[in-house]
Image (cartoon, rainbow, N blue to C red; front, side, top):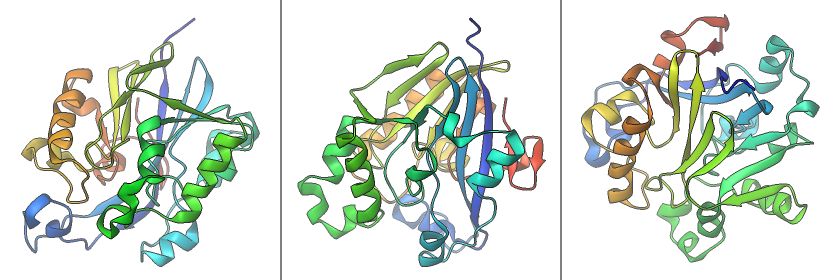
Length: 256
């Protein structure tokens, strides 16, 4: 069986006027613009179709003033995917922009780090600064998946399928994870919020929403060690993701 995976990125929202001060620890970059895109990913390989994060609802995007661009149902149609046939979803973490629509995948098993579930349902959430990126309804939906037998909670590095591994990073949230996949271009890392923007990696400066600064910094090293080249590190929020790869639609690009 081939270990190769195809990878597709959907941009579902864009904040073109975001200032760098909001995206780098300590306000680095000041009033310079640093556009911020919002992506979900779809993979095809030995497990069939796998979704990576479930994007955000239109209501959540409106609440956070993020204009909606593409949608997951539009990406399904462009790729010929029946969402009923997607059997696996990897949630990098449960912030609102990554975990908003689990119901789009009615037959899937979800994969998350156990530390993320403990984090979002534990004492850390008494702090407003740590819970600010979460929506209670999203957390409840994933707890329900656990009680339905449709959530697998992992501990650290896991080989999910040939050519696909999950890796705990932490930092941004206690249970943040990222993926490594074998593609025809080499080993690619879907970095999630371990690397929101390419500049975070280049400058070794984390995003300011943090649980653990040291883990966030160590995550940069983990990502670099597992990708075959810098071009194969795919950030979660960089407009470069669509700009640098061939588009199938205005909001959907093939990465591999």
